[in-house]
Length: 109
Ligand SMILES: [Zn+2]
Image 1: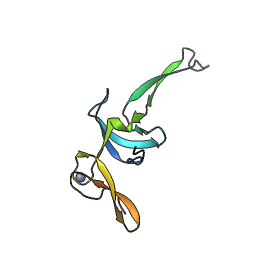
Image 2: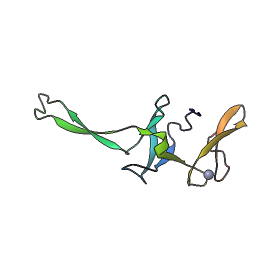
Image 3: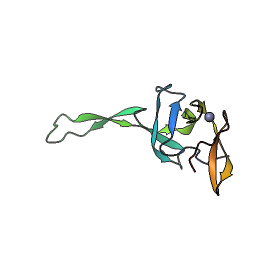
Image 4: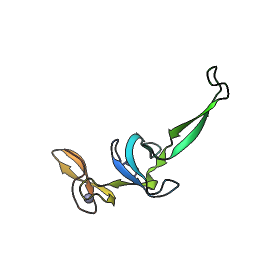
């Protein structure tokens, strides 16, 4: 099983399934062990907060929930299409991600 995360913080991704299908956003956090990411402004979950002195009735805050990486696709910054990345090229000693569609190197080296 390939359990390497092919996503990085700052990647622009498209949600391909679930309630937020079709939404795009930037990855703000990644959880490699769970293979999950948090995408900016996507998959908002309502969280109830406990009543406090200032807000005695309690409140609801919205917070982005984690998405499994199988639900997102990277948007290539070269061809601008949702794509699958291949980790294959080595450039200047670094492994870089390559877009399967346009074969361009996605990462800046
Ligand atoms: Zn591409």
